[in-house]
Image 1 (cartoon, rainbow, N blue to C red):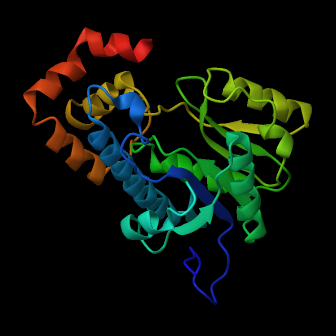
Image 2: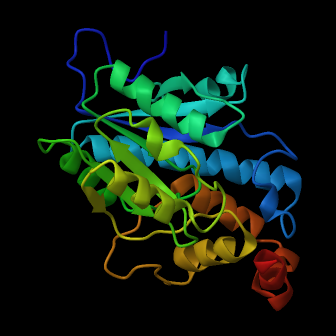
Image 3: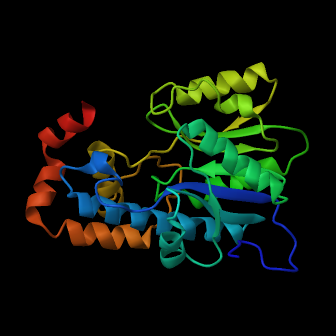
Length: 262
């Protein structure tokens, strides 16, 4: 059985599970189509997952962290076994309600003996490694608490807990700009202190894809105070894709930004 923890080793204090979807054309990163094709969008998904896995492993060299993919759809385990390092464990967490998927991943991490459980998005290949390290260290502090990483679109890219508080995942308007605020409100109602990380961005539409391109190749910075992760797989893919002059033009066009905002 594939696991992030070798037999005979102590359990890392923090488990981080990426909410991961297998790369399937016409079902992965479809909001990037156009300007990408469905196949190119699926390739982006794979590159993102590989870089995020590497980022977690880099963080594990600086803090007590184990990495996982909380994956779906069912029967897609072979995709993750093929594309990801063996040090990344696999957790099946696929439910019709996204809140149930998140809660399942948190619960399974805690059941595996991690004192802190973190769910992480699969859309932020440049997320600073330091933020994963900070999360693990905050969750090592005594007392129940929450760590939340707000996304630029009103959601969150990361949520860390020390106990499985189901209420944090109930009655949330998923995929809207209200997610982070509703989660903070839930934490307040439970009396949980919240450590809020710096904001970061999800690459889930054309506008964000253009931002990623600028960050990787044009010296742009989403947050100058933060050191972004350097995603080698995403960089190589973007170099390959943007070798197409037509795609470069579509990424830079006002029309592409307009579609992303609709």
